[in-house]
Image (tube, rainbow, N blue to C red; front, side):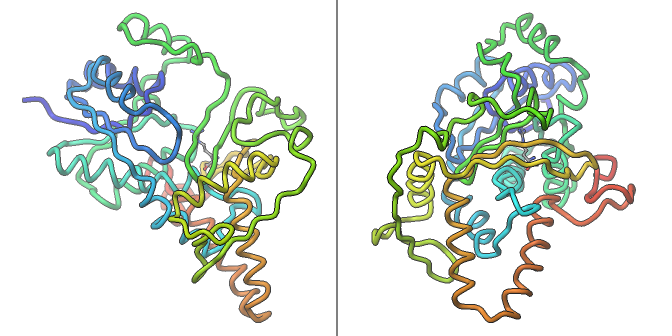
Amino acid sequence: MKDKVVLAYSGGLDTSAAIKWIAERHDMDVVALSIDLGMERDYESIRQKALKVGATKALVVDAKAVFITDYVFPALQADAIYEGQYPLATALARPLIAKLLVDTALQEGAAAVAHGCTGKGNDQVRFDVSTAALAPHLKIIAPAREWGMTREQTVEYAQRHGIPVPVTADSPYSVDENLWGRSVECGVLEDPWVEPPEEVYTLTKAPADAPNEPLYIEIGFEGGIAVNLDGQELDGVALVEGLNSLAGEHGVGRIDHVENRLVGIKSREIYEAPAATVLLLAHLALEQMTLSRDQIRFKQRMAQEYADLVYTASGPCRLCPEHAAPCHRDS
Ligand code: ARG
């Protein structure tokens, strides 16, 4: 019997190629795990695609509710915003995805987990560090970090193995999305002189195209957590979804940030975070009304600390003093 690996599967080109590549290179059975964090996608066809490409099993988990209650809302209570700009949508989701990979690996008796991250970004560190914390015995396979293929070679590899290559495979951007926001990087965005082309945005209207009339909304908070919208009690998922469309429609939530990555490079990122922008601002305004001066000062410092911990998924790297978090050499 072959060893099993549980792969975080998005249905995109890289993770599809990864199914084949792991099976060939590591001679393992691949269990594909797709996680619904609020991206509107047809998860059943993603599941079918995984099986078609060669996964021995394909699972879908709806993790929207736990993402909001256990990851997003604590970050809202903490006012967690990285470098004053980024509400941390991608960073908050990675440890949850890692946890679900580990849970599934334990259920399946797998020897490894796998993710589609490259060796340049923060996400690999978050997956690696979280997995090592939860289940140090599991091996971590990161095909896109190991295979050394360019984009063109990956497309060619996919074609050679009968993996459907989406028309969007030549999108120059790397995108990640969940309920708390959407992150876009690469392509022309890497030049900070370039104004992001309108095509990078999908959740927000250009402010110039947004309605002229302002929209008033009332948000009810309890214990630092949003619980109702315009007087209507809503669970966290529905509230964030509702606010994403209302604020996005009004051109709220575009963020253009040159950010300090934890792997030691700067990168230009475009974020869309309509609900997060509104909720974080509203929460800060509420605290300004209710906390003392010293409480506010203290909270601001803690908020920054909290945001750094979420962003880096850990403390500093033990091997490389120049890295703000363990790099993959230390996992
Ligand atoms: N720079 C952001 C972060 O580190 C967003 C990363 C987006 N990831 C992606 N694969 N496009 O949290």
